[in-house]
Image (tube, rainbow, N blue to C red):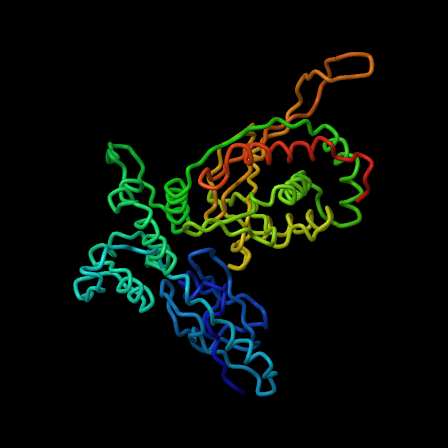
Amino acid sequence: MAQAELLMPKMGESIMEATILKWLKKPGDKIEQDESVLEVATDKVDTEVPSVYAGVLKEILAKEGEVVKVGKPIAIITTEATQSKSAEPETALIVEKAVVNETKPAVALATNGHAPALDYKSSTRFYSPLVKNIAKEEGVAVAELETISGTGAEGRVTKKDILGYVQNRKLGVSIAATRSSAAPLVPASVNAGDEIIQMDRMRKMIAERMVDSKRISPHVTSFVEADVTNIVFWRNKMKGEFQKREGDALTFTPIFIEAVIQSIKDYPMINVQVDGDRIIKKKDINIGMAVALPSGNLIVPVIRNADQYNITGLAKVVNDLAKRARDNKLKPDELAGGTFTVSNVGSFGNVMGTPIIMQPQVAILALGAVQKKPSVIETPYGDAIAIRHKMFLSHSYDHRVVDGALGGSFVRRVADYLEKFDISRSI
């Protein structure tokens, strides 16, 4: 018999630690290779951690609720002496690189151009050495650092947090303004019979990011109504064949995403990000896809290099990501790197919406419900009234870098692709 350490795995380029939510196994339990052993939470996603070894769980080294650094041992597993050693390097590597995404920047001017000495003795919060160094270099006092809302585990300030804070200060955004955007001007009242529901970790994170996005980006929304009759007829004709051949459902979502991808190629300046006074034009087209969870929360997995898929590939990856999102099986890397997001509000029966941008992207498209409507159509014999399938597209964009001409032209182009859909195409 031999013993092996199960390490906290690497779960993304910017993830440096994770909180243990729940152990799925207890000491003495037998574990198969790749079987889930525990559930962990990062600042991006809750996920299960599989074992790279087969054996028996001998000892648990980290308790539920404990924050553990990537690469640190969390359990000891007794394995067969003949167990392949090929898993060891994989386990050892399971964790590096979670280091740099640690907090949002805070800012204060240094006196006489010199970085102040910072005394953290009175602080009740944990700050990483990286965050402390940035605070020192940027002249951010401890009292000011305490005001920054952290997006890391347990509200810790990350590198991203403090750098963002510093950038906002350079742009003239005051701490008071930042505070007022998050805190209500009038406190909520609690009366007899009212139910108080504590936000869960994900809801807190969503709330914070939505407030940040509205504060950072001046939102403008353009609306277009599209005639998707051809798509409805084509899907009705093809979905049975697709289900039989692929063992999967053919929904409207991949068809709509295909039109979005084609439009991004036509208007590449919608596929950008803002970094201070720089505009970063993204080479890859990575489509975020908002998915509603059973808990009521929202999560946005990303289809990387979405333009490399045909309609069949898009259908399969859309279904896979949506299913694993609802089953809490997504990997943290599958939630990062999006360059444009699509949200299907029509799945809730909504005809349109004004979606909030996923930072650091600059645009998001909401897809409304497909509805039958009487419509005027042109024929060789004159105008006529016919029943058509229509839907609204709602395009919110960051007015710092996307003007109305670009934002409006882009959503119009998406509608054009939908309306010109080739009903004779194969799948």
